[in-house]
Length: 119
Image (cartoon, rainbow, N blue to C red; front, side, top):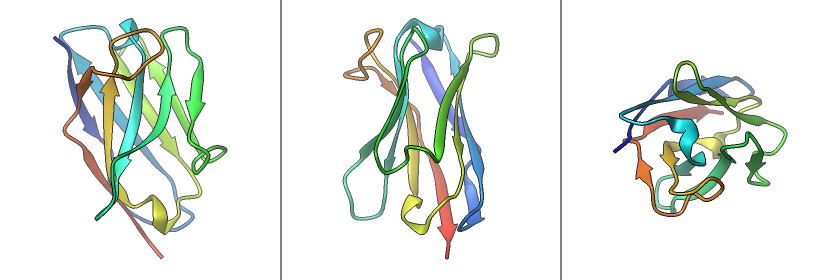
């Protein structure tokens, strides 16, 4: 069973950048699709980005062009590079490894890391 631990969250000014990490243990993160979700206060958790086993990437329209998902197989870690941050990006960010090569359905969640973007 894979375990996921996020890190890299924090407080940043609007327009700034952050890089989130999701370190996997117990299994290889590249074995299935993996991705990021976020949940803002009072809102439902929403999908942000996915990277498939083959390395294809997919993004929510709200972050396309600003966020980049990537994976370092040697470190068994996934990343979310976030640039041009906006106050509406403020949320708890969760990583997840899915149950197939392209889908995040089912799978395992990390515990989350807080990202706060100040105006």
